[in-house]
Length: 278
Ligand code: C2E
Ligand code: CA
Ligand code: CA
Ligand code: CA
Image (cartoon, rainbow, N blue to C red; front, side, top):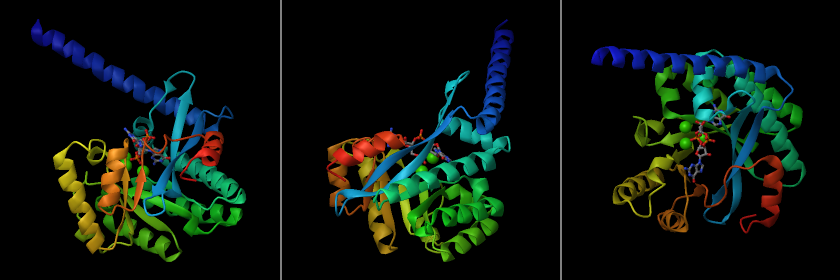
């Protein structure tokens, strides 16, 4: 009876997972072609610790679906990758983000915008060519954009990804390594890649003010990054104490709820007019 009920529960769990995955896939396909504004971009400010001013915005996707409600990006991006939908999602993100960036540049703001690319995007020439032409159409240079990729993107299929990385760098694009510290690669390895920036994963930053292990790790990353001439962004800064520590230890840029949550374009505009970091 025991193993039977376990088995039933296990099967039900699998069915739940499968059903959710299927409805995410179906609804996402619909969302990508619908005119309902289900998908949107929000922007989270990054502050340069030397000037204490906004230097960049990370572009983050949001999806609000009438059937599924709010679906977290971590969840649907992973499913989109597996379902062969990521090219369409990233295309949508590129178009929206670059058009928003052009809008803010027109208003006189000089910040860069950081876009997240997933593993498959780095290997997709068609997508990368599209990126270049979208920028050209808006009269923006690649320097206006930063591209965030994770370490695993480079380890998974190194050769093509690195080839594309080098090509885009030659064109003036900048890359940042996201979620640094959660993967396997080291700063020494990054030295051979055209990467100028690392983002320390928020899991090391969230409790920085109270956790001595995190402090040890972050201090080590910062001093090594200094040796390798890498810029360091700390994400997940939620309090003043963490910001002060990071500033003291020579971190370059911070991002987190302490500065601001990710904001819609409209909210960002009013935030920019009222913030002491503006
Ligand atoms: P990520 O690239 O590491 O993005 C940072 C995440 O940390 C965001 O979650 C952001 O809202 C959250 N965050 C920022 N500051 C704080 C803080 O102070 N405390 C806490 N607890 N969290 C903070 P979000 O927006 O839910 O995105 C999750 C992940 O989904 C992203 O992680 C990224 O991997 C993926 N993602 C989001 N948008 C896109 C996109 O447009 N394209 C792709 N390929 N992936 C995306
Ligand atoms: Ca990111
Ligand atoms: Ca991250
Ligand atoms: Ca991530």
